[in-house]
Image 1 (cartoon, rainbow, N blue to C red):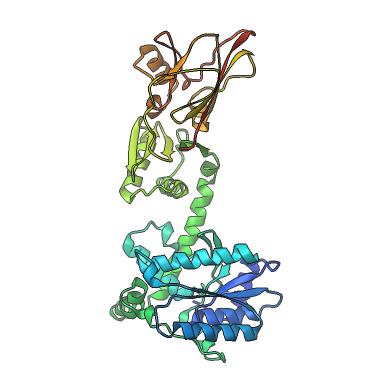
Image 2 (cartoon, rainbow, N blue to C red; image 1 turned 30 degrees about the horizontal axis):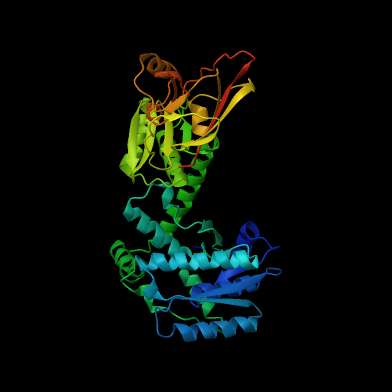
Length: 440
């Protein structure tokens, strides 16, 4: 963990990589040894603009007095000091998670108001080892064992961790050289919280039984997992860049990507799930991968009442549950609403540009067709052998067939929009129908 190296040199290297000297940086100062050492080290770097934020969680009776001491200390350093007081009674759910969210949302607000580039926190190598062990016991994927990132966006704020490669023991040695002595928060060892149990009992027990310090091993795993994650991200980058997003959700065609290794495919599925807020279990991810590799058609995986459709190697992540189509609607000139569609009908127009039809344009959320003058209705599709065969030949995803309307005239379907077959109108006055899909 680089205990015997020059810590200031390591922090300078980190700042050179991840911090913009042209913008001020906010420091999250708890008053504990880690954040105080961080403040001291950053103060020693020339031309670095700094400010300080302290969050009083009111977990201890002494916290208010400590906040005042910190404010006085920071004022003497000539830095701007920001303070937020939290009322724990006002929070619900997991107290640790709730306080964390409040903290980072406060940091984001300060960055937006004062132009700070982000916030620096005092996370160190021991925090990293605890995170890796926790994720290991939770059964996380190998790439997720990378643990705490050096730089990460949390609740919309850039978070940098300059001490992440520094051990707690090395930080404590730095504390001994400081004039301002840190506050030691007893809640850090509170068994009510997982972090407290890690520090007070789990790690000491494991190290005693194993007969050696296991923290370095955890950090090594994090570093290699981080490298693996970067490698996998690079491998799946072409697929991420080919994603088609529309009002219905996210679409990705993997039907011709037979060179994807299983571990790459799993990583890709996880990245897609994160992108659209899907919470798939490990088993569900395995099922999705199998269906993709098999080229299975018309399959569906449900997660939190949202659908992921798998069709011939193509993935469709729906944003929300799609309502059934209403009954038929008589199309009139002008703008009308039909279910999730906004339809604009223009009569007596000249045939313009090329039509926009086909299920890919449907996914993009925009259709444009020209039809001969007539009286039309828009409505749900009903069983039609000719159209069903047309859709099968064009490999139209089966789940779209029940949620996309068709055009009716005199009780018969005269136009569908899912195949790529365009009408051949002559250069004459026709009806133009523009359809835009509202975001679900």
